[in-house]
Image (tube, rainbow, N blue to C red; front, side, top):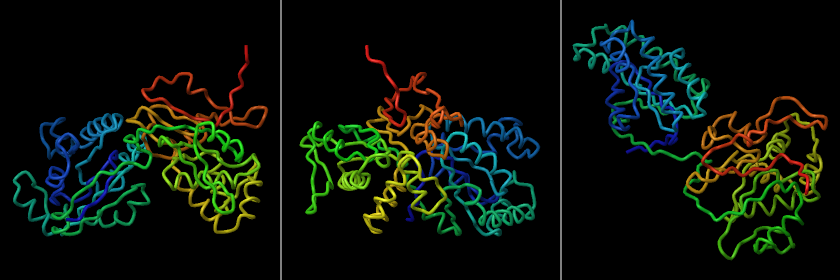
Length: 382
């Protein structure tokens, strides 16, 4: 058997000609409730699964049901030919609307086999030219599926490949719901190694140093772990020291870390993108230059690999640098990442040159506790 991976929460499009065996394939690999068939939707709206005149209404129903499933966080499979880019476009938009990853599973089987299968079914009255046209459209689609936005594409190009495939459902990188801690969540460190060491000591962590006296790890006698909320770097005097300690803790399993907007900007700078080295970034870049190219490359890889948020403790805890509204918990898209890194921004700036952010947390009533940093909030003592 060949095991293929699909995200546990995704919109899966089966792509294949009429007669390629999509419905049989769907029944073998997915639960009946997970599959939405265009033929079934035609039958719902017209009493005839083959009434092509009902296709528009059928897809209205199909996309409505798919949207409801995706909004509830359920894997959804679309059983339709899906051989035309125009028919896939609205489904890709649906995946984007619900911040889930789109997957294409292509059944690229011989035209002769599909024609033979259709000929044996009295309800398939169209000629072989229809299947040939669909197959031509499918072949053209193979070159563009990734560009259209499909995150994962699996192509099965023989009867044997179809028969020997199985699927594993993988967690998104942000899904650590089976990780129950206990955790100590630490906010924006911003290059302040001395204060970080002091805080870890107060929390009863033992900081481990290497032969050069550099802080490279920290352990807790009770097995507690740190979750860093991002913005490890910039502004403070020792971003390299903070990075070395945090990276060591993550590597040893003594910490988790989400990305902050400062890590995202650092990655762009290290990738030689055009960024303004403001808000302490230039200091971090100077420190990294002195630390050497090998360490700098490791920092770039570490920061570039950070996820934007984690779902922890059975879904009861969410950690994100700038917070995250409930509808984005456990989802994956550009706008989810932008919210987690920057907050709910208006696009305007205040008198200090900082982004104006909506106070999303004031109205938050979600089931999970969301721990975040990013925005300092002035308080008045009584």
